[in-house]
Image (cartoon, rainbow, N blue to C red; front, side):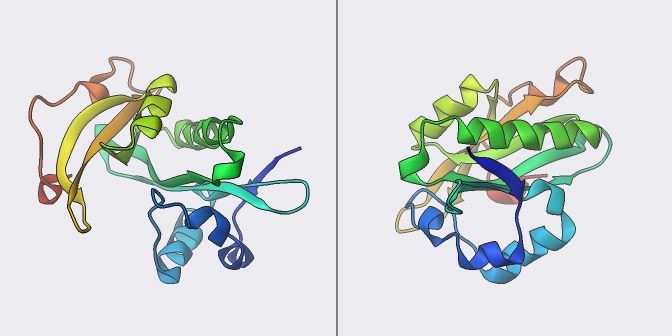
Length: 173
């Protein structure tokens, strides 16, 4: 049986099998440590019965007023553990934490080309709020979708009314 548990410092030395996926954004150790120190409740791991890391989610709560929201910084599941519902379970946990913190919505950024992820998020009731031009840098810069899901506090679902035009990364709030 899969265990969802808090991420620990020791996990930083055990999650390479998950981070080697080309669609997974990877960061330096200080970045992971910052999230672990500031938002430990948002940093969770899925672990197999034999102790293998199957996937993880890391996020945070940010913003103010009606822009107070949960943010998914990274969600990834190792290829051999995909299509088991782990990503959906990790997202559900992050949404529950965000609801308890009285957030209005949860948002995330996903590569426009990552059609599998975009469809998965849509099945989880996320919608495209806006397109962010050249959000991901690389040999060829790539656009991202800023996807959002309204939480119960946003009764009128104002947080998910889509913008009609794309934005640049420096215009993000």
